[in-house]
Length: 234
Image (cartoon, rainbow, N blue to C red):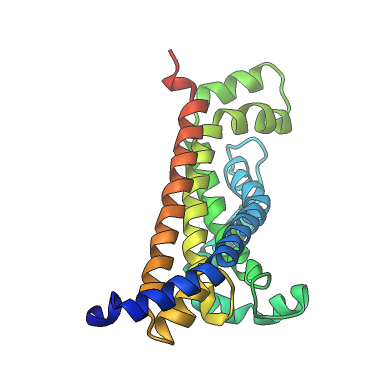
């Protein structure tokens, strides 16, 4: 493998693949990652809030059995390995998208795998809040929904962004695995060329590009989180 990695012929073939395939694959990776992240937050954010405010001493107490069902459901989805989950949701993916393979189809299993993870991250962010802030809001006559929307979420925003960055990078890693079932993006390039056709230099370049994307997302998330964190301001 290493002997053939940097041969002139291998480099020439790899550069040709980079020129013809990488731009579209990069776009597909970004599109799928951001779309799945958005859907995961649309579902996971309310669930995470509900796990906190729905406790017996929370703002909007829920029946104990319902809270236990929500926790069990989230834990169940989180415990299923992503590759197995992709196969299990084939019927649902086919129902929603019309096909179980392809770039768009991979968004469905990615979202299903990510939203339980997001809900736990949201729950963790909200539990870090100072309870005195919530008590002050309630003592001023704010309704539970006002406390959630105007106090809890804004105060937890830096932590939510920081945890959201973790979610984005995790989903980005999942997109590479989705190439096994025909999902597009850099994962497909790495598998189709690097694994099946033994063009290891192409696989190496795809991995490097994925690492660069992770670093980019992490840097942006860290910068936004620090900028919005009131505790870091003088």
